[in-house]
Image (cartoon, rainbow over the protein chains, first blue to last red):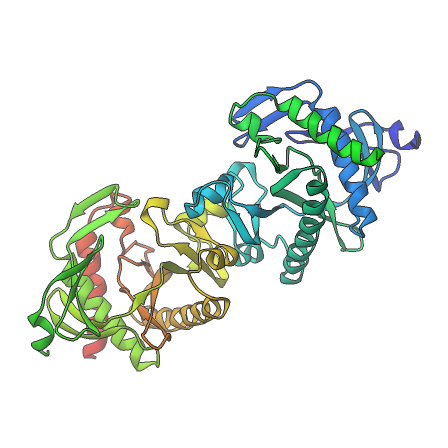
Length: 244
Length: 244
C-alpha cells in the first residue's frame, strides 16, 4: 500500500457499483466498491451493507489469479476493505459477455430454457450506454460507433474466451458453475487493451454445481433474498482454496 | 402463365402479408399477396384494398430487374394481379437487413437521429420468430441455433450488399432514397442460397429524394395515412422507367 496514491482523493466517476478517485499518480486510480445493488438499468435499487467488501475481496482475488495465468488487468492491489488501486485506462464502452449456459437475456432472445448448456461459449457485445438500455451490438454497429476496430474486436473476443477458460476451471475447483459473465476492457496509453472493471458475483452468474443454487446478483434481480450470504459463500470457497 | 401450376391450390402457409399455395409442380409454389397491413409483430393491423396488387407488381418488377443484373431469386413469373409463381425453397429463418441511413430500430439501438447517412452499409441479422419478437442475433447466436453456417452467413452478407448496390442505383433513378430493407433467403434442394420472399415498400424504407417523404410501410406504422397512394407512386415511377 503506497500512501502517496491515496493522498489525493477527488472523485472523478461514480458508477452504479463503484466510485473512481484520482490518486497522486496520474496513471493510477483508486476504486471504491459500494454497497449499492442495482438491476434493470438502475430501476431496482437497494443498499446491502457488506457487498462492497465482498466484491472488493473477490474481484481482487480473481484479478490476481488471472495475472498468475498470464492475463494482466488494471488491478494493482487492494488497499482497504472496499478499495483497490488500478491502472488508469480508457474504458471501451462495450460489455463483453461470455456465456456457457443459457440464462437471462439469452434465454429470452433465443427462446431456450435457462440452464441449457452451450456446446461452445457464446460471446456478445453490448453497448455500455444506460440511456439506450445497453443494447446488443453486432460488429457493424461497433464499427459505426467507432467503439473498437475490427482487430480490437477480435482481440476482445480472444481475451474473453481465454478468461472464460481460466474462470471455468477456477470456479469448478470450488464447485461453482460459471454460467455467464460480463467483462470490460480499457485502452492503456500505448493503445494496448487490458481487462478492467471487476469480476465478482455482480458481474458473473455462478450456480452451485450440485444444487444449481444461484450465488450471484440474480438473487437480487429476482428477489430470491440471501445475496450477501451467497457472496460470502463464494468468497469463503475462494479463500479456502487459497489457504489450502 | 402455365395453367398446370395453378390447378392445385392447397394453402400450405399463411404469413402476415402473403399466402403460399402448392401447385401441380412440387418445385413450384404460388404466392398470393394479401391486402393486409401489419406492424409491431401483428399488434397493429389493417386491410388496405389494393396493397396486394401493388406489392405483387413492385416485387415482381424488382426481382426481374435483379435477375437481369445477375442476382437470381425464387421468382418465376407473375400469374395474376395478386399472384406470382416462385421456386420452392427452404426459407432460412433470418431477416437480413441492410441499412444505408439511420432509421427505425437502428435509431433506437445506437441513439442517432433518423436520417443520419451511414458511411458504409450496415448488415443485421434478425431471428424470424414472431414469438420472440424477431430479435437481433450475432453470428454466435446464428451458429447456436443452427440457422446458417459461417460460410452461409458470409454469403448472405455478400449477396445482401450486392443487392443493396443494385437497389440503391435502381431507386435512385426514380428519385427514391433506399434507407434500409429486409431480405429473406432460401436454400434450394442443392443447398444453394437464393433470394426469396418479396422486395416492396412493405420491406424497404423508401424516402423521396427531394422531400424525404416516406413512401413505405412507415406510413402505416406511424399513422401517416396515404399508404396506398405512396405505393402507387412507387409503382408509377418504376413502371415509367420501364416504359421509357
